Length: 369
Ligand code: GDP
Image (cartoon, rainbow, N blue to C red; front, side, top):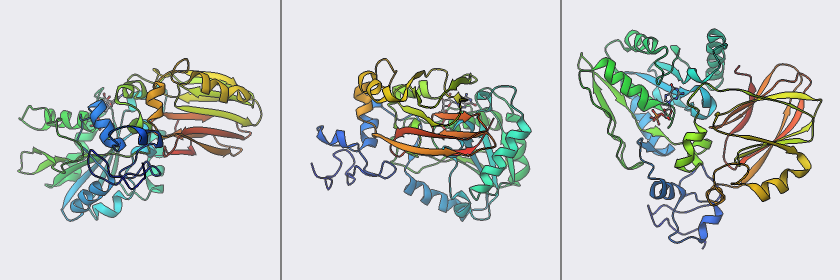
């Protein structure tokens, strides 16, 4: 099959190079019949239709139309996948409309975490991404923590205008919208969640008392997040539900750790030090010597190391290596979008390698915790 083929599902031109762009399919999937893009594959095989989602081009068009309204924009992000779920360039598109940043899933962090410090961290990161916010609200839509502050912020900044709720997929937008419906409107209805992803930009309107609305927009799909590329059935293992129990590993250099079969972490060089894994409690970590890591993976991927299965892994992009130099000094996180992060506790610096599916966002950041 040549790469000029079209997807038998949606007709988009197929390509194997850029997971973040339309028409992508992994090399290995080219040999299957019918030849369909990864998005169509997932819709067909995992019946992935719980939220209305769109790709980045459609989403940017939608955002652009918000810019020409006079409204309040509520941007909901996932604290567990902050860099993965923040909509970059949001500021450019919403124009002069104020943005309230709602940071969801605070329930996942250990209770000992200082919320003021957390808010400062969020503020700094958002600013670095070029996002100006009128307010930052930390909450848990699911556990009903801080939700009164969300309502307060909307009331305070709305000033008689419509409210657009925007966010990436899996950040908890539907959970939040359903709470808003409950709190705001007489209409006790669940959202329609059966629409076919990617085919509509229709937004759900929740009427407010003054004739204005809260408008739910489709969730934007970022294939740079692990949550978007694993099989649907694996998502619940990846998305933490309960507060994360951090896993601490004292490591010598030349040791490797696997997070299931999804990520490999090599401590290549540096003094003995500890690394703390902030990942879903449903995932497992395997430790080995670096020199054995490759063989271990070849022998045990999708099995002893944990899911997804070998077949499912073959449908995902192959690993790519990120070599990261952790500087001496303040604590840093190695962030793997949609999977969590590894906190480097050493202050003496280190060199690490992270293997993750190609296209997944991996970066070094100031420690969140
Ligand atoms: P959407 O795709 O943005 O509409 O997200 P959903 O509302 O469908 O939620 C995605 C996943 O995150 C689901 O598994 C939810 O149970 C979970 N979730 C939503 N809000 C929270 C929260 O505040 N805390 C935790 N731990 N999980 C949440």
